[in-house]
Image (cartoon, rainbow over all chains, first blue to last red; front, side):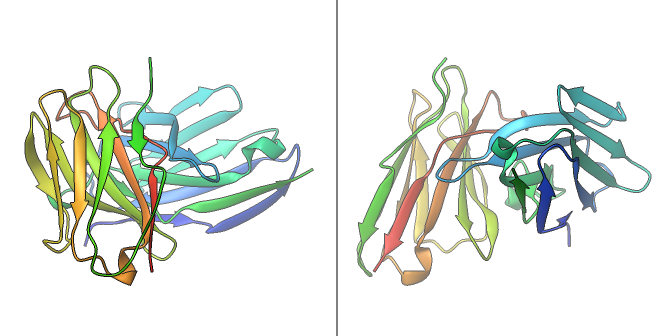
Length: 114
Length: 113
């Protein structure tokens, strides 16, 4: 079935290091790939997204890269800070409609150690 | 512009009761989606509303229902609550039916005892 697989499930880095989270998707027709950040007690917040007509998008310390051939996309956070600690979700549009507008990965808990 | 507003933030109910959760989308957004979030299952799609009509529905039992009003505000209802319904219920709004960019509220944390 269709799904979005996200790795790793947990990631611990030292402050200032880079963090990379990777997702793979199954529907080759998918053309929109967002990343969400969820802090404790809050809902997921859209932090960056990319459409399939570009291979990379950057916004300050975060970037997303897309490899349509391999059907995977990644979130890159550089110069990590303690406030980057959160759960990150990738998502992609599903093929079938009974999974909503987006199907989400299982999440990555990022811990940035000061 | 105000974000997505969900009320209440917390709810404690007992088995067999019913509950109604409310969601006000971002002004101008007409599509509202509901998700259930649990530690084991992640984000699971419940349903989506646009122009007061349910457009899509996830694989949840009929005890889960919802509606959307003419001002785009939405409610979801869970009847005959079960322990397994304990979860964070998230509402997300988007501009139109075909718009995949979702903006989430802070959710309603439901605990069923």
